[in-house]
Image 1 (cartoon, rainbow, N blue to C red):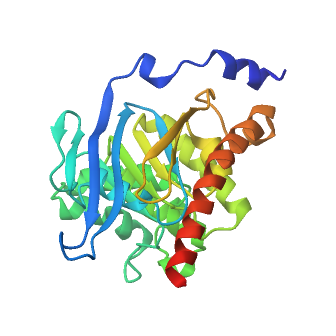
Image 2 (spheres, one colour; image 1 turned 30 degrees about the vertical axis):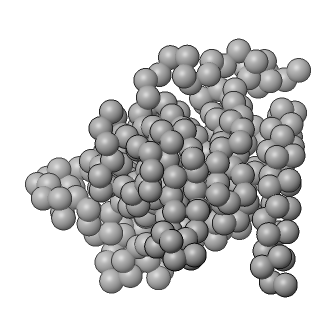
Length: 284
């Protein structure tokens, strides 16, 4: 057994010592007018607690409602039924203390890197000295200091995503929601970005909620992984990885890494086949 595996065996579950940061209780999301025959039951019911300081990932078949789940936590979409809370308060609009990073490049092409990162702070009315302090810290932390005067078009895809993460980081969110943030990147860049994300998580002690299609990414990054069913998406299993907090991409060589990804795929294969059968039936 490797040293890493021994650490895995004794790592405590997050709920053993941390308060709840955000929670969903009986949450469903139905799109379309009721009674019209066009309503789509996209999500739920879902019960979920995210613990303060943990890294929680969600995997599931396409169309199962993963992004809808994130939208509910972000306050971008209201539950049809059930309740959503952040730090004990009902979520109504994007809560103070919540930051969101999407897959699409959301940098502003007409702004330099430093002005992209400063955008949210200036809009919120922070004083110039505080804006400068936070931006300088975020640029240094994300390895962007030498590119502060560059425009997004001059950067690689991975660097532009760093800009988007830095723009979220400066607002000091206590809950960071990530919707496939590395989906457009190649595998090697994804691993390096994942290391950066783990470093950010440890530095800020924020709660992180990640949606990903990559089983390797979920297995590497997470304290816990929620596996979702085919639509309407529910969480059919929660997997505790047991990884130590100081992990990085080298953990992919640990023997338990393969068992975690295999366990996810065992569940997802069945749910993905359900989705494919349902889609074939609609095409006929």
